[in-house]
Image (cartoon, rainbow, N blue to C red; front, side, top):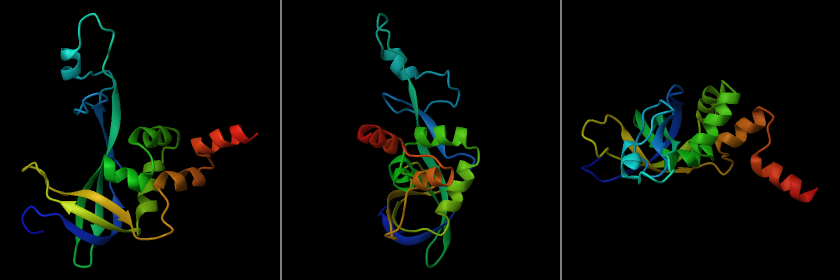
Length: 171
């Protein structure tokens, strides 16, 4: 990777870290929050008016550590929410809800992604302490690529929420 210019690579996913694939942020300002569900955003609570009943809520965003292989080397990259949604086909909250019902969903997601080929644009991290390249964009190279959540729902015998909606509308 030359200087700060993004690099586009054709690669294959070798694996994904299954232990930590998302993090909590404030729903309003998207500042990172501790994993403790009862912790509130200090910035949003500090700036809210005393008489308002607004309480900051949180959501989860993807942060995937993925091992990819290019034609010359294997490297670890970080795939944040926007790019990870292309791979998963859902939000991190949706996947986490699914994973709570199906405890092996993260492991299965890693297996589903193994061997998939993508065109990825990689950036150097803006933070000088960061170790891994960032995935800016990801494009599946296979015309038969399906997002992880679709495959998992099929494997676990669940319908997508959209299927429930359409089925109810047709009946």
